[in-house]
Each structure stands twice: as C-alpha cells, then as structure tokens.
Image (tube, rainbow, N blue to C red; front, top):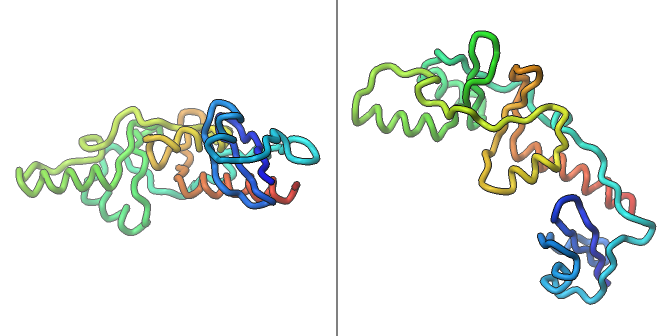
Length: 188
C-alpha cells in the first residue's frame, strides 16, 4: 500500500509500508501518484498529518570555521583550507562584516593564473566572490535545503547582526533533514 505525505514546499514523499521509496517533486499529489506508479492516493498518514519539527540553521551550523580577513594572503588561505578540511570560508573586514566568500576553487584558479602570469602577491579581497548568499541562524533548515537543492553554493555564511558567526554546509543541512525524517518515522 502506497502512502503519500506532503512535506513542505513541493516535495511529496512516497512511503510503502514504512519505507521511504522515493521523493517525487510535483505540483500536486495526483501527478506524484502517476509518476511513482502508486496505487493508493492518501494525502495523510493514518493518525493525521505529519508534523515537521522546527529545525533551525543555528542547530546545525559550524561556529568554529575559518574566517578570512580581506588582507589575508592567498597562500595563508590555501594552508588554512588544507589544514581545516573545509572547502571555503567567509571574508570579513575589520568590523567582522561579510565582504565575500573564498573557496578552494577560487584558490585553484588563482594558483593556475599565478603559475602562468607570475602575478604579484594577492590577498582574499582579490580572489573572493563578492556579495555571497548568506543565512541567519534563525532560518528554517528546510528553507535552506530548498536553496541548496539547486545550483546554489555548497556552504553559506551564517550572519547575525551583520557579523559572521559561522557557516553551514550541505552535510549539516542533510543532518538536519535526517532529524526531521527520524522524527516523522517515530510518529508513524
């Protein structure tokens, strides 16, 4: 017996006797049933609709992540990224305000160009991506998951009162979604 459960936004989860078979992204349940070849169309599980716990960015973000000053050398950024095992970090000014974001990809591009053109000593503000997308610690993790499900960044700086307080990655968002999934399975 198939069971469809609406799960925020346009995602519909298809369950078959307590196992998640697939996620179908559709505008309505009828289309989800057709695309999943489901035989039964129940829009609510037995016992009523599933509740989604309010999981926030602050619950899963990394507060101890590398933050680079706009004048940090590219060499220092590379060493920090290698040592910390993260793929990027926010770039801030003297007041801790977000200016940009620098990634491994930005460093690779710089190092390739530098090897060909022998460019002068460059710093974070020369290679960073300006005006990066950011999130607040009070933002719902499912909203961020929607943003990350497309071509958006793999990491977002977390901003509170204009200052960087951490980052959140896809892995942490997956962890938050897993908490929601476990919560809903325990209810059924």
